[in-house]
Length: 475
Ligand code: GDP
Image (cartoon, rainbow, N blue to C red; front, side):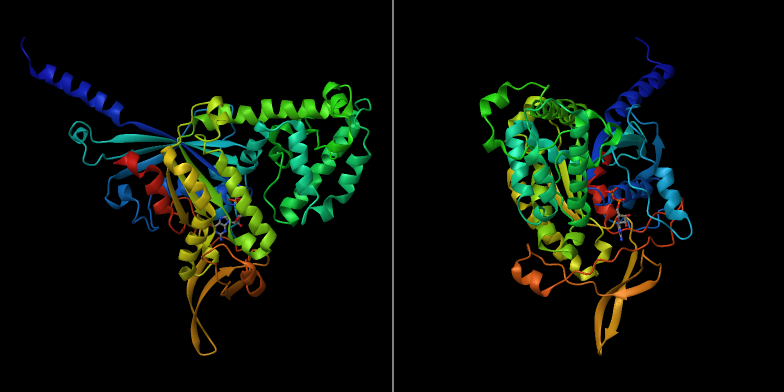
């Protein structure tokens, strides 16, 4: 056969297309954390660091940018059209206004797709193609939803008993007394009264909000009660734990159908597990490749021992969703494929720089039991202390003749400038001694003034975040 130039061009173009297909990669990246852990700020910054045209922030750990192989990134229409879009524009608008404001947090699940163009590195394919594309689907969802996982393995009785233990112990008990009384007075076998159930559920939800917002506790079940999304006021969210199982005739309970109060609560509990909890794992969780878990460790250090212990417990609970090798009831739902898990301590610009290594070791300690469980299941785990959007400047200040490390920022409360040493971060899980002597002074700051669409947002270690999460797909 005669091979002429035209043929060669055709072959080249075919090779090019094949190579492109091989190089065009895709990642489903999921971001979670409890509400106010910093998800919205994190995703805004993640996107911004990639799409900002004149990157002025430090990207030295992100090889694709540092080696000059990064070409451009842009937002493109997302994959799942029925999932609300992550509103990057509004977030950037809030940060760019005068005075700048923090973006409105999202309350449910949102998505955003980025398309990143880069020059491949060492690969042989480099000679066949100049550019490759990495598509990243970012999904943001409340960490509270993962706290419902244990419910999948529980009956209504078991769940109620677990909740009762929580409600009857400190610090929840003080606030829960009147609710407990009301449930105790309920005749479980009385005919179903939908209004009474709605009222009880609303009282229980109010309690959960107090636990979360006033006491700073994280272990909130069912998670959708405080973040209902489109399920607000739906009967599926109108049940409560029953308090005195030991006092009722078990056989009668088992036989009661949803025409009785207790039968109806059990029916809704089961429906909640099936339609809400399981559906989330099947529809979304099953498709994630990489997961970021954000934790604000500093607020609990400020709030005290109960809040901190609760964070510890919550991280362990959240992580159960990733140790599917052990709890194989998840593997029965789907075959998981997460290969990288990143734990992030957010808002580290609230501490002076020399405390950052302590913050990482504290996070490592919190994550240690989880690492042991997860590591042999082929998931690569890393921990980082970051600021998605840095709101303070670090410096030195002289105090009683000594140079001390300080941060300076603009107080969110009244926009006045404040310079302070907020306190030490313990490098290990704090003991009694720590709580007696120390207090971490956590002050909410306003974002700095520099944000505008073209400039990159100031940050701490977002480059390391990018390298861990997407660097390998851009080599
Ligand atoms: P979400 O509920 O998980 O989406 O949390 P947000 O992203 O809305 O963050 C909650 C609040 O934490 C924000 O309004 C900020 O006040 C603060 N915050 C989040 N990230 C940072 C950060 O990197 N630095 C500072 N100083 N504050 C932050």
